[in-house]
Length: 469
Image 1 (cartoon, rainbow, N blue to C red):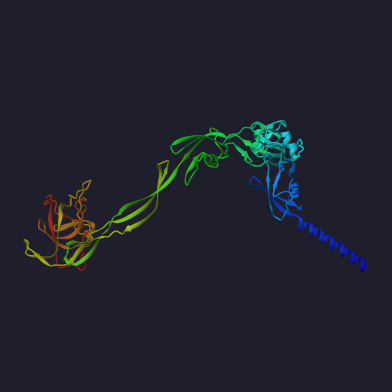
Image 2 (cartoon, rainbow, N blue to C red):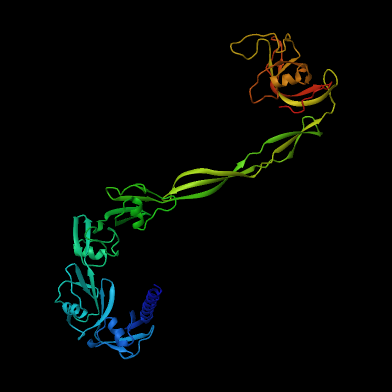
């Protein structure tokens, strides 16, 4: 048993060594032909064997450098010199052949030299041009390509058709199928897409003809074609995209309109700053340095400034809307301050009744009334005052707010004499509140309409209204 194991182990070692020697003897060499490199793996120890393993027939004019008898080494470069060299591509596998002559070869001769038996499912192109006649003469061939024909299914405006095409790209297939297309047509996959497909699953190619459209935009009209499914796609293809707030009619996501007309409205917004004045208010302030009923301005008023930011929307340069986007007060208004006197000074006025002390005098407009001359409609007589007292000479009326301040205040009026405030009257707005109405009995009444001085007599009341309004 042990002897058999030893024998098998020796055989195994020998076999592994053989595999090892086989693998290490496989070496890459590079063939350089007109600046192009082709890598070939060979077990040959001579350049001649490497040339044969590369599929190059030395009998057809191949001249390798170094010479065929030269030792082939790992990674060496072998130059192939031949005037009649031809590159062959069969189903993606590249190799070189040499022909007895360089010019005026038929396709059949090229195939024969390359050792290719052409099947019905294959097609040939020479120098990138498909050929169908094997007797076609090629003046100076340089490349020979053999490919399988590709089954395709083409859907276009003319209907569907299935055929085997001999080409490399979708554009080749469309040309062979007689489907003509123009810029703007939608082709899926793209014309440059490589062909691929099988008899059970042909490659599907869809051609959608572009539609004529007219685009009104930027003050002009553009006539073009589009294969876009939506208005937005058509605008993008025409190089007239919608930017920012721009919009279109029909809208961007809607399908192309039946009449092919699209309008683009350019929208932009401007922000303007507008300023407006903020009115100042007038304040009053007591001043004990001024005499009663005297006034002076303590501070001039200054208007404030309010700034508004206004958003203006323009469509094709025409304003369509504006709205306030924000506002701020740039400068607060400064109030105007009026100082009014509170200093009371007692003075004396000479009257037919002798000198009288007064603490305030003002100029007022005076009028007159009597019990039956009240100036009301319909006419009537009244013998009672606002305070409820029986009317009598020596009473005067004031506007109601002054009546509330000076009720029963003793006064002196040069054109009337001594009096007390006992009644309320309602003058025209031109005279209020600096107005008094002098009471006369009916048999002594006379019409009064003039300015006069009103003296407020002492004693000074406890609550003096410093500011008359």
